[in-house]
Image (tube, rainbow, N blue to C red; front, side, top):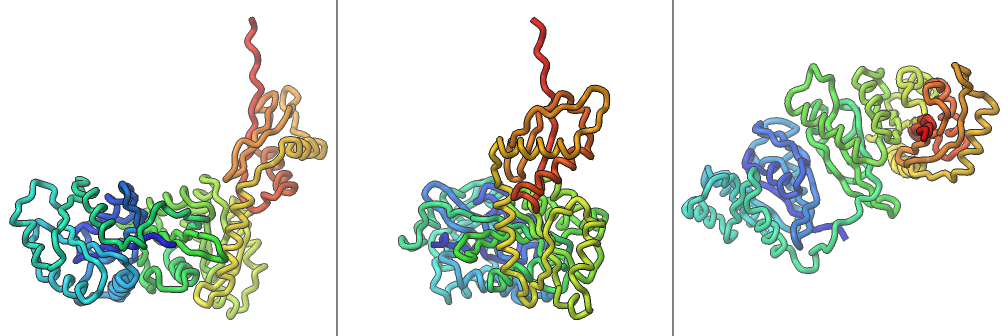
Length: 441
């Protein structure tokens, strides 16, 4: 059973994103004074005392959207309200009751969803007169909060718990399952892929670059297994970033660190860019399994392209990801879309592999017989090998002198491990550890 869903709605700039972050106790949604920063449905699990629910930040409600992006954002608000078990109508206590607040309340009254009025931005001591204004909306006692100073949040969570029907209340946070981050430059089809897997318009998709600003988690059940897709902001060169781009990049990096597997989305019609290379380097640094997704394959195939053309090209321009499998896909048509998640699950299994020590040492011994380390000074010796971690698999070779082993020989050992262990398509780490000498007594 999914968690109860609580939609956070209101006019622009009343503190909805700040409220989501405060309730979740971590930065999920981008906070910025610029109206229209939030366009997707951004969710986070909230657990406070006995209350456990999924809070969903939405775009500020406006009467007349001024762009295609904002029009789709308003549609996302409607979808959120259709699925919500309760609604938080956020108002600015400093502004008092405004006409837009009244119009939003009228819209909510037409539904049958429980509504809680959240009188936010009470950063200083409130007056009874300010609070009492919002009784006119017809939803009972407002909950006075300050998302900025964290005032009133436990009271708000308790009020939400009372509004959720007993049969829908959750007792625990569900397992997020396999966490798959969808990373790539702007307009390569990341959000289209999320929607294709979700089977609904879960995130806004337009031809406007930079439509996705937040990292959006989408919890799905695919082939009987829980999967969390993490849609991220499209990346661009730092020199061209505005403050929203900066926050998006920071969240993308955070998504890379917390995911299990990365779907690195590339446009089949475009060459690898500097941004792509930088992202690839960071993926290797954090040690995440990667699927190179050659998206928009329907267009490339129509132009007469074949997969073999891309394999050598990617090996040349992205050598650090030479181990990563390449999949031709089309988020638009659905071609190979479900296979991406199945492959991601397989890569996670590879990355979680534990190797028996005896088998590991047999592989290392055979590797030395085929090609021993080059002699530089004292004869290099490998005493034994051990696995010290998973995700990524990490191996330490105990040797007489660590500085006697070159990077070339380390890569040789890595390749032998890939060939002989079920870890051929994921990053691995091999290091040499010099044997410590005993101190003379």
